Image (cartoon, rainbow, N blue to C red; front, side, top):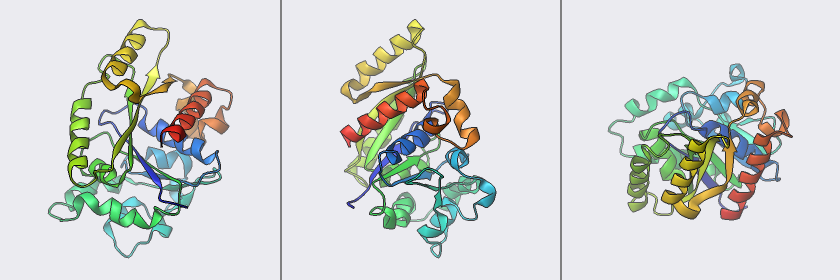
Length: 255
């Protein structure tokens, strides 16, 4: 197995479908027979909760990043989906930024600590917090690709300039190989003129980097994490399952 494709799913705006995309893209890739690792880098731990009973989780990404004695094998848990493992987060990850102040390797800590995993998985999916702080910078320094979910709403593009500026700074020095895999329109309502107009606006800005797949609003997508299932097993005939299957196909085409 060669090096992993490492996809950071990032947007500093909250509520745009980052975690929904992370958990279902990871499952979609695993369903293709690939070995996939889902890394939860958000202190809210929603990706972790989507697959794991957190009462059974002893060590998390925070322990791996902060304690050199902790090994990768100690923080990886099976998801219940064949081929998909989870490296979970806990709320203590929120302390990472303040505790790394003044550390020379602060932007590289995740890359260095997770490096042994690069040859064990075909894909590593990074779910990031809704901020452009040090945790997100760590994800961008480690990643080979960036996937940006953008909600189909009035303020959709607000803040994307800051994100793209951060990406350019990362590419300028610590990670010149980072590339924009694509922009994913999420929470789309095909019935409204506003949603259609916003999607056109996003395409005007990002051109062919916008995925053909559009993720529509779906109650099933919101419900599935509560049952610790991906959309593929929770509601296999739903629009969400069909759309994330299409996204998985597009990602494999582009990587």
